[in-house]
Structures are given as structure tokens and as C-alpha cells.
Image (cartoon, rainbow, N blue to C red; front, side, top):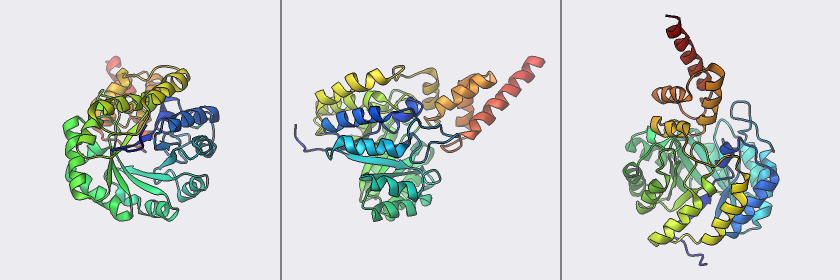
Length: 343
């Protein structure tokens, strides 16, 4: 297998996939997945709580194991074959956690903000660079801003020192033409690498990812066995096969990544990653993919339809970090339902 690559893939199952397992990854699971993925020649493996460093909390969900233990296990397991990355959302994670991760051997920091809030990230990007980390600006919910605003925010990320800037389809809302337009715009306006992170809530993650590659994105996220928030992400092993069909070099061993998906990851899943009515509603309404589980729990508590919660959240343009709104919306819907029944 050649190391020549047209695109560089970051495996996100050990971060985004944390949502799918309710943040219950064990050290053994992280070690096994990271080792297998590294042996398949994936260049980057992201490890953290689903909501990034320091995400383990009442609001976002508690991790089974402290994330620093998981990061340390991953670094040890990859044995230099891959680089371990972390995600940090300013306001959740701090410079302290970033330094701890770097001391454990992390090589990449992905600094994530809402698509219109890049200006909260300069100190985090600067500190990541000071620590010697490859640094990524991660513009979440990219469907919520016009292309001109996306370019403006991406330029800010670049000015802060980001080596790469990502278009992040956090809700799985974008369609291929919209992805193409956004990647083209960033390619024309920035001098750094452009990346894409997709979600599969409308079953478009693969199409959107290929559109991004065709438009010039060279940093691409995948998640083995589609493991991620909502209906999951672009499925890594399928992406590798599709890229080979299209003559796109990834440098990844297809058989090995397929084997890790089938023999290591699949047995860990309580249920297959699939497009459910709730995850479909996320993509339809343009709602942050990690809201699905929270909305389901609120629906059960208040006796309302989780889809109604998600649709209303979409109408209100709620973004990541506003998980508390899920309870408010569920309560309001329950009161409205009771009022109608009383008439």
C-alpha cells in the first residue's frame, strides 16, 4: 500500500462516535479501535468526549472513563503509525485541557466554533500552535450562514493561524451542490487546507464528501461503521472503497479498515448506526446532530413527540451549546398539548 495520498483522512469514531455510545467508551475499546485504524494507515485519529475536551458534564453527558485516559491509551496504541487529534470547543474546553492532551502526545488540535463565532477561537488556535500542534479551524453548523459569511469566518480562522479550515455539516442538512459551493468559495479565498466533515441524517454524507473532494477539499473526516452523532458520519471504510473507484488516493488499506469495522467496531454497538426518524428529522430541520438523544429523553419525560421538539428547535435556529433549550421546548409542547386536550 502506497503512502501517496490525494486526501488525508481523520477518523472521528472515537470522538463523534462517543455520542452514539452515550460517551461510554472504555480504555480497551479505544485502544483496540485506535490500533486497528492506525494499522490500516489512517493518518489522524480524533479522541475526546463527543462535545470535545472537558465535555463530560451533566449538560452534555458524563463519560465512563476520563478522556485523558482514553487519549493516552490511543497515543500508546497507535505507536507512531497515526497522529492522535482532539476537538476543543471554546467555552467547554480550556487551554489547560489542551496542554494536558499535548503532554500526552496529541499532535493535532481541532478548534470548533459555531459558523458565525470564529472570533472566540484566536487564543485557542494560537496556544495550539505554541504547543507545536497542527491546528484546524472547525466551523460547525455551516449550513446556518450564507457563503459570504462562511468565507469571512474561515478567513478569521486562517488569520489566527489555523493550518486547515473545515466546512462542518453538523446537522447533515447540506446537499452536494451546497457543499460544492462552500468548498469552492473557501478554496478561492484561503491559502490553507480545506476540510469537510459530514453527517448522514439525510443519507447524503457520502455524496457530500465526494462533492467536497471534487471541489478541492483535501482533509476529510470519516467514521468507521458510520459511528457518530445522529445518523452518524461519512462511513470510513465505504469512503475508502469509493475513493479507490474514483481514483482518489487515500493511502489507506481497504481490507484492513473493513476488517476493523466488521471485527472490532461492530461487536461494540448495541444497535446498528442507521437513519431513524429522529436522525432524519435532524437533517430535515437543520438541528445539531448530538441533540437527538437529548430530544428523545425529553420527549419521554414530557409525553410529546421527539420530532416536534427537533422541528421547533430548528425553527428557533438553536445551536450546539444550547442543549438546555431542549427541555424548555419539550415543556412548552407538553403544556400546549394539555391545553388542547382540555378544550
